[in-house]
Amino acid sequence: MNGQGGEIYFAGNYHDLCQQSGTGAGFQFEFNCSRCHDTWRSAFQPYTSGRMAGWVDRAVSSAWGAFGRAGSEASSALDGLVGANWGPSKDAAFRKAITDAQAHFNRCARCTSYVCDRCWNAGQGLCLNCAPDTAAEVAAARQRGLNDVASQRAYDVGGSSGAEYDVNRSTQLVCPHCHTETHGANFCPGCGYRLAQSDSCGSCRADVPQGAAFCPSCGTRR
Image (cartoon, rainbow, N blue to C red; front, side, top):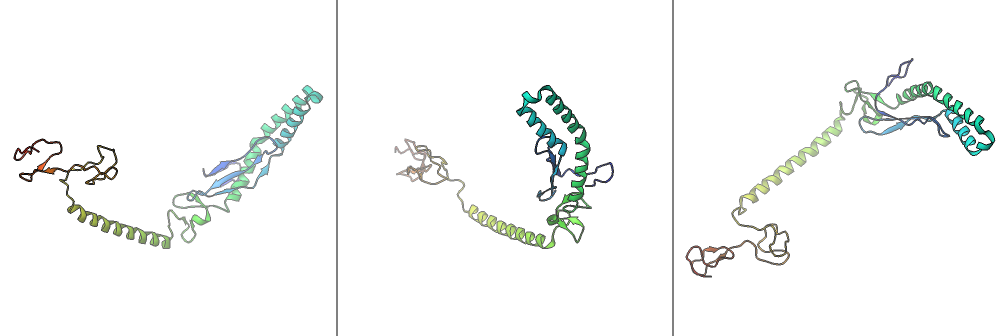
């Protein structure tokens, strides 16, 4: 951000809060840190011409009969003056706001971002994105290591349990009677219905599918 001379150099980390006319006419700009996005606002600078135009417009509106066309023409002329002075006045106010903002933001020599003091590594002359705080990085790495190892151990435990899981067992994930989710249980947790389990033949003890009238192994009628 640089506002010297006739040219104005500035970054895109600001919002224009200026108001051209009305009793609240004035100049104010809000700058934000490119890293944490905290904001800082420049001091409000009133725009006298815009405020006067607002006062005249209100006076003419409330006393139209007294001023008539003359008041309306005076108001229009003042509006023209407000518009003519707006650009140069705003540029001057912007230059001052940029100068004031330089005390609150630092420009990173590596990524060229503007950051606040909390996001600035003064020892390196870089932002904390480019030169992170060593103690913070060590603490974060320690936590990542803990999480990674704990996750791997949990994965290994799940793998051991999976080796014992009967993947050939038929399951019904939704009860056909009450439509409750079963999560692979033998009996419905909602109504107790027996789920996806084959009955045994009374003669040969082979599995007999549900609904079968005869044993598929020995032909015994059920």
